[in-house]
Image (cartoon, rainbow, N blue to C red; front, side):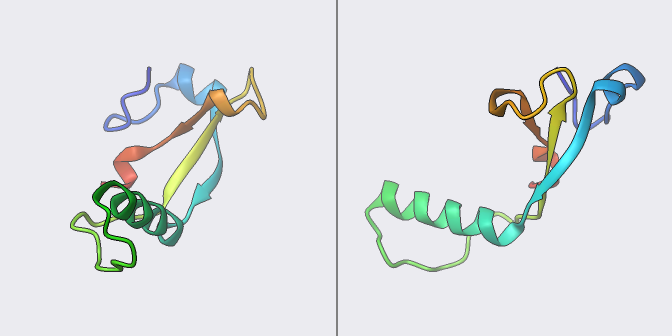
Length: 78
């Protein structure tokens, strides 16, 4: 388990590496679509209440390219 507030330990840094970024705009679009679907407010493009930033995607080197081994640094989001 990774505590993103503390960052990666030396051991974790050896096997977990950044492999990409999900841009803020993509996250916002997904969150707005989810919100609207959940609330039945289709077409509501009002901004989100929470500020969002880009999110780093990490991969475990022992399992490259496996979707279930991808980690997101959610602390960058909130």
